[in-house]
Every structure is written in structure tokens, then in C-alpha cells.
Length: 129
Image (cartoon, rainbow, N blue to C red; front, side):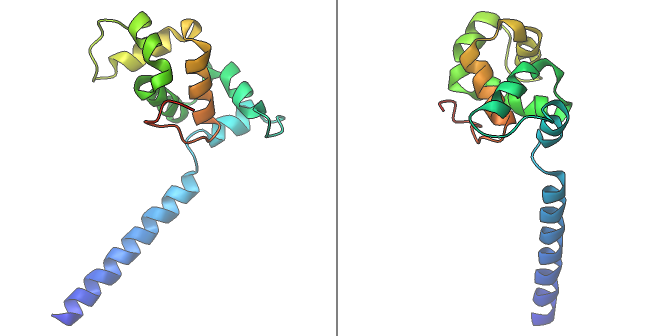
């Protein structure tokens, strides 16, 4: 019985370490976008955030998913959702698609929140900066 437990613990540890290694290799969801779109930008003083903000409509699917999550769940985007996406039921990606199609009309505070998330700030579910 003790051998079986020890074996299970070892297997669990190996699976966990493989998952962690894979997650670390993948990196943050917007790292590739920052590297590609903001290659010459020196980090600091909001420069990366400003760069990403100018490319919000050109992000990879992975990064776009992250920033749209902020738009859909963040406090800073609630008025945008009410104004631009009223009547669209949540779930099935309808609100995300609405925000994406109205990106030019999204308020600066909402775009700032999305850009900060893309630049690596942890805002998910928090809304206020």
C-alpha cells in the first residue's frame, strides 16, 4: 500500500512539473505580440501600454482573448458594454465579438485596461487599476 502511494505521489509530481514547464515555455499570452508589434519600444513609463493600445485590433488570438476578457469582466469597461453591446446576452462569445467589432468606439479607460493587461499587468477580474 505504501509503495502504491509513493508511486502515485511521484507520478503526480512528474505531471505537475511537466505542466509548469509547459506553461513557462508558453510565456504570457501577449509576449509574442509585444515582441512583434512593439519591437523597438523601451519598457517603462507606459511605453509598452501605449504601443499595445495602438495595436488592439491587430493582436494574436491568444492575446486578444486575454484583453477581451478584461473588457467583458472589468469595471472600467462596464459603461462601454452597456452603450455598445446592450441587449447582447453573455456567454457564447457574443459580448466579446461586440467589443471587438466596436473597438474604435471603446473608451480610453477601457482600452487602457486592456492594454495594461496585454503589457503584463494583472487586472483580470479586478477592473480598477
